[in-house]
Image (tube, rainbow, N blue to C red; front, side, top):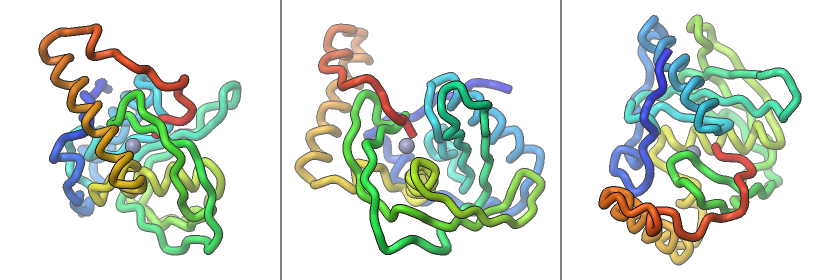
Length: 189
Ligand SMILES: [Zn+2]
C-alpha cells in the first residue's frame, strides 16, 4: 500500500466528472486500498478517487467514532437512488479544502447503489454522518465540492484564501501558509 498525494482546491482536476469503473479489477482494488490508507493518515473519514488525481468513480470512507472498531467501506460506481425529503445540516470539512469548515444542508437520509470490491452489486441505506459522507464523496465524482453548496460570496472567500495559502506554501513562506486556522476539525470528508 502507498500514501497518495491529495489535491487541494482550487485545482481543475477536482472539478472534472469522473468516469465509471468498467471492471473491478486488481488495479481498482489497489487504488481503493491506497485511498483508505491515505484517508486514515490524513486523517479524514472519506476520500474520493478524483481527490488523489484519479478520474474514476470510486470512494472510500469510515465513519466509525473514536473508540469504535474501524469500519472501512469501499464503493465503486456509487449512485444515489433515493434521498429523503427532509434535510439535515452538518459542519463539513474536506481533505481537498484544508482548514475550512462550513454548515452544509443535504437530504437527511439516502439509499446508495454501488459495486463492492468483488464487483458485486449492493445497496446501502444511510442516515446521519454516513448519509452526509456518502453524498459529499459522490459529489466529488461529479466535480462538486462542499463549497459549491455555499453562497458564492462564502465560496469565493474560501477559494481566495486557499489560493493565497497555496502560493505562500510554494514560496516556502510558512507563516503566510498557516494563517487563520479554523476550529479543530470535526469531520474532514
Ligand atoms: Zn471532500
